[in-house]
Length: 214
Image (cartoon, rainbow, N blue to C red; front, side):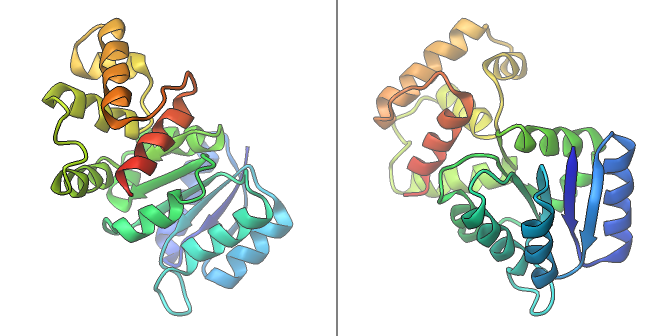
């Protein structure tokens, strides 16, 4: 699987490169600024991009904008963005296209090798991976407007795990309930949020997140 990596800190860029290579990925390019990232994404056409949101020259959102621009040319381009902290605006902008193959992880998560590698693979396969802290912020913001206030505590638990990209089996295992119970909670969530259920896990997650960010 071919990966383009964008990170301005040399030691972290080198560490991520080695981690990906150790797990069978081919890092075709590792760049340190926004313009180089966009150029590389368009030329290399990787299977997945792992991108720091803040890159030179201004250290604002060059990485995110380069990734979004590349996705305009190639809508299916999988992108996993890394951030030092939770920014709801960035999360919303990333999810706005509703096309899937998107991930948003805090940099703290990349120290957990298995979690990081699994996230890269999930996004590359067309899935959605959202950091639990990002989901918590979205849920909290949504609750403040009353959009999820009518969900039960268990339904909120299921919704949060769904939004992280978990399968029904993974949700069941985490919450120590049966998969049939997860299916019932999921159906109730979609009914209460007026979102039509889908058999496609990625579309389901995107639909929930799209609703929560409105």
